[in-house]
Length: 233
Image (tube, rainbow, N blue to C red; front, side, top):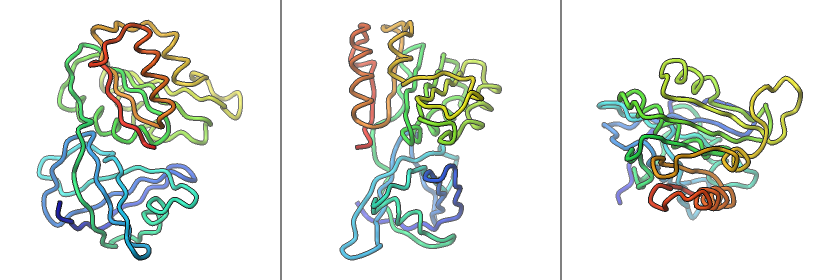
């Protein structure tokens, strides 16, 4: 696949270690919500390649894409991306990936932890803005209150679209100000009533979480074809 070029146009610091970057391409950039792009990391020789999900939905005749990522200590790709300056040019490949929305059931559940939320930010907003009337629910797991990002974005979607709900659950809220759910996403799912034959689940995050969620869903009787996931490690 040939390399394409883009330049950094915007950088948002969501938490001390989570950033969102927006790039602009010289021509139209077409992709499907849920897909990823692969950056050529040129901090040193030889270069390497790192893949990151696209975090914003497609725009008609648009030439921009965004990605949200966690800057990991000693992580070559994330630290290089974090070091980029506005208008700096980069090379990338893509879009790629088949982790896209199917919408074959009446109920849709998205389960994410950390920056596993990235492709769902694109998928959910894309489907709602296209007029999808299915029951769409997001379960977003984080550790601390200070780790929360995209909260206002999803709260605004929930106000605008009554068929969408968002639950953020924290495993270790720092103080009593938190009035949302407490516990791991797996705890919430295990105690939830799910219409397993008419529900489609999308999962994104670390391997251990995904495996546990899949196990819970199968214990509840959900068919494999209703379970979709993408692992980050």
